[in-house]
Length: 389
Image (cartoon, rainbow, N blue to C red; front, side):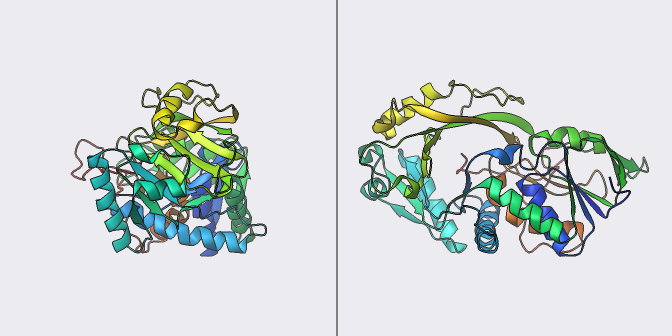
């Protein structure tokens, strides 16, 4: 364990490593602390969606910059990061959902995104699994797609190390030291491998961020919530090829399906899932998925599932990120609570956090994501994001 560093990044997932890479490239002295293996937390999922399809301007901006940065990372990484621009297809089954798609798609286009509202028939052409008779409309954004988080995490770690960052695995954070009591500022981090003095701490610990915040004296309302997915072989004769199907989501139920080299990836959000750190896989989500599929994509009902996986979302009360300098503790910068959007926003957030640590004004406006917005004394509005998966 080094005795000192300018910046300690807590968390070796997508957000933490993207941040470390940006800081190291800017010449900062950076240490990354990961208590397990890199990318073993929320970044461990087999495929990560990348999109700018949101209804909030801040999320759209982060998504657009993320798409740009992922294209660059894919190009400069030997073998790439598995980036596939298959598009996102959001399906509306009510007039209210259709109106929301009209509004959000217009906003996305005004900010430079490529997105259009399409007819039910066109949606079924893009994804023949869909039953167009139950749709009112859909939005399609061909610039969006997915990448492989493990490859992206490895690429950021290699780049950060090449630029001088020290990226450590198997090191648990035990405490964040602050002083003085009446005006606390971070002075160091106590770990299972020793203490490192530092000027800045970046909290990028994903689902474990609330406990890290408490160590520093900051309230970070982040809850872990289990999400589950599985793969299935595509129905016979499906065209286009499975790997080229868009990431398709039903707004009424959050049912989703998209193609991959391993077949169809299937999932659905479970609003009844109790918060907690469970990461064991079971089939408790399957009945809700099949009930939705019976309406939206009937040919998916009863398909044998394989490769089931469970991971953690890092949810905030409004399901949007906490990004910014802490007002409670000097030198503490927060980048967590992404509520399922962490991988897609990680490249842009890395740039933002770099600038916040180095005292620069970030190019992207993240004023809508203040870490203290849930405090009783906060006047900051909560965010209302329509396109949550």
